[in-house]
Each structure stands twice: as structure tokens, then as C-alpha cells.
Length: 193
Image 1: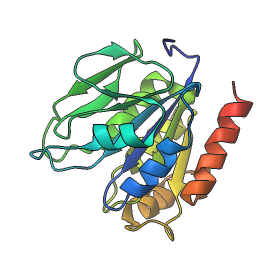
Image 2 (image 1 turned 30 degrees about the vertical axis):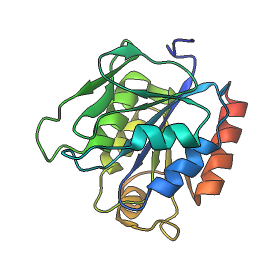
Image 3 (image 1 turned 90 degrees about the vertical axis):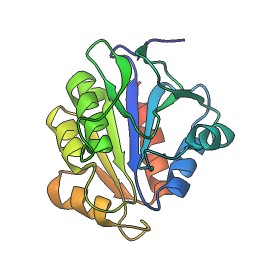
Image 4 (image 1 turned 120 degrees about the vertical axis):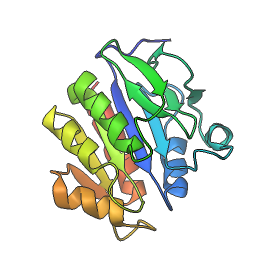
């Protein structure tokens, strides 16, 4: 499979309460030959078994990888982590799964910031439904390094705190309903490869 190194865009999807239906709509929409790498970070209880890998596998034609140790990024793959771990990308275009620094570490910010610093303008961050403000700082980092910031319309989000925080604090490239986000990303990837 193709190693990403600056050739493909990375699409990182971050959500919390109420975001799973939107995540499934997003991952369903991309065929298995999509020339992009995907990440999904969904806030889940760290001490409970997660079925996210199976759920995504049943709803997407993309390959699903639960990250254990460092591995190179591959196109047409969705990377997820165990609920107790953080996903990050290093400067060798390797995806890593590691323990958070503390229980207050915000998992979406961590992923988005690592993509901003290492993938730079090839990073696309999407903030979906959720409480509080995880994702805002990460989108700010993505914008600072030339990437694309996308937010689900607060009116569509089941919990709009995360989208509202991102909109109020970041220069967002696109705000829309999930079906509009899908079309925006497809058009962007088509016109930028």
C-alpha cells in the first residue's frame, strides 16, 4: 500500500457525544480507492470495551486499523486507537498510539496538533458534535500550518459545544451539515490531487 509521505491528504474526524451517526455517514461515503488517509477520534470511556473498530468495519469500504505500535500511514485506511490511548502522527509519517499525559489530555487536540506539525498543509481536521471544546486548539494548529478546518453545523450537531467553540475561536474553512461536509471533502480531494 502507498506510504503517505506528503502525497496524500489526511482527514481527521473528531467527535464526542452525539457524533457517531455523523462519523458513520462520513466514513461510508469514501470508496476503498480514496487517495487520502483517515483518522477517527471518538470520546469513549477508557475503562470499557469499545466496538468502534467493528462498527466502522461494517460501515466503510476503507481498511480499519486499530493502532498498536508505530506504523507508516497508508491511503484508504482509517486509523483508530484503544479508548485509553491517544493517536498522534510523527515526523516520519508514522501513526503512534500512546498513553495520555494525564486524564485531562484532549485526544482530538493531540491528534490534530500532531498532524498540523507533521503533515502541515495536507491536514484536514473535522470537528463534529460534542460537549466542551476538544478540537478547537487542534484546528487552530491545523490552520496555523496551512491545513483545512471543517466544523459540523451547530444546528445539526446533537451537542453543539465543540462546534461552537471551534467556530468562535478558529478561522474555519467550511461549516456545514454532514452531507455538505462530505461533498466539500470529495470536491477538495478531487481538485487537489
